[in-house]
Image (cartoon, rainbow, N blue to C red):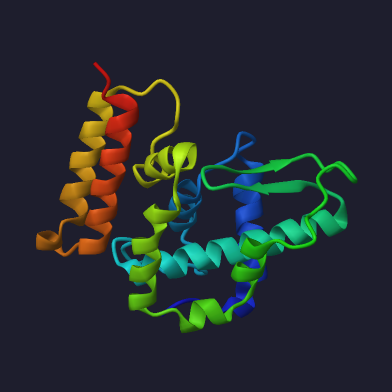
Length: 198
């Protein structure tokens, strides 16, 4: 059961508090873990290894983030940077960080039909198509995000360790998802190209 989106303002406020406490920003994963640690009633407290739970949690968080960004911008109090690896509050500067006329991601997450109407099969299709859209540095950034690692000087041994942890956690024999496991394997192939150099 997902929380009712009528409470999105409360979730937005909770996210605002967390982001104010983290001036360098947080990843989506860190935000979700902190919401769970503070017993937020606005996200599902179920395992994120379930594709549909993962999607619904992600959707609720991003719906609230875009609502928060709009409100902070309207108030002229801050700018909320919403990126794939980092979500961060920065000072408001009129005219410099104006919102684009057309923001397709914002439109997607503010359309609550996507939360209600997205099925488990739809989520599988999204995951299957995810890697086909990634190229170059985007591909590397997406692989690092899936592994919950930061870019920078990374030891290949750490990447291999993280890979083994994720495979163990998401293996279908342990109740995990085949699609998720395929994504993890693809991410490892990508990271090997960048980090496993002689």
